[in-house]
Image 1 (cartoon, helix red, strand yellow):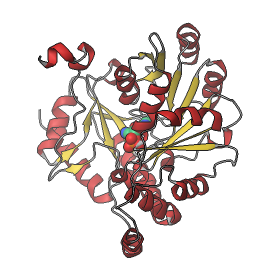
Image 2 (image 1 turned 120 degrees about the horizontal axis):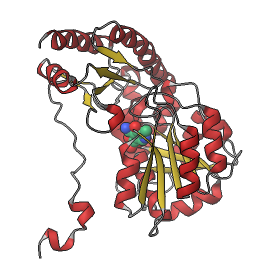
Image 3 (image 1 turned 90 degrees about the vertical axis):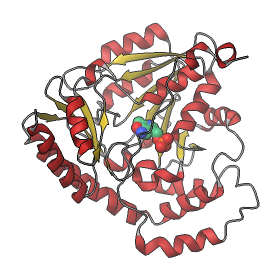
Image 4 (image 1 turned 30 degrees about the horizontal axis):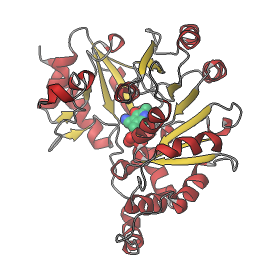
Length: 359
Ligand code: PMP
């Protein structure tokens, strides 16, 4: 018996999710918050963890954490929450709960790769509707046509979108929710960097769910995502959740951070301000075209055929960004740059100037 006899062909054909080695590099590839846990809160946080009973399983539903999340996000009282080990796990739970031969997941391309990957893992068909090539906006008529044709069980809309960074037109998203026979999940992973949200709209349509994560606010290492929506939907999806999926240290640390959110709000406000500075600096560089962003990263296009050399030139100078050229036709010549600290952004800009000046 070999893997070829046992492992599904579609799984063997995959390449495992690749995380590049970033040791010693300025890490601007993964949309992380560059700031560590706020120093002034470190002792109080550690004191909280001292009370954690690690001999026991975690609270299965994370009740204290749910209360902190509800308050922080202003969740309407009649809406429920489901917690996941990162929002990736919630995407997996949604897939498992609906998967049947012939069922479909729809999203907008280029978009977050895990919608497609997890659909494949679960045996669901993935349908990607291309964004508008000129500005990465939502192509509403094409999307509505695809929804009518494919009748997707799940439709994901990242708001703002990864890797393009833009917010889609809210009225277009409303039309999609109304037209969808299945669930529409508005993925607000980048909520800390925009003022727009569908949380206040929950309940307006029975098929709307909103997904968020603490990763981008500065807690990526905790692995915590959450899904908000009508209790009758979440009670069903909860049935495929593995027991104790959110560990005790994550529950305690995230609840602590949410109750002291001002410290993280200050970090995300700094990142938002730096985003504007970095955008202007990138726009001023000959040979680079940045796209406007409502997230904590900026998509930038090099001159045709130059993305690989620019990516390598940055790497040679100690800066790691994400090369997207080749990932999707609309991303030709594109790099995705996470907004770092002012020092990291300055180092990136210097490295970029140097990389571009060499032919
Ligand atoms: N949704 C989007 C749009 C993302 O870009 C990401 C992470 N890059 C996620 C979800 C996953 O977040 P988490 O860290 O909570 O798994």
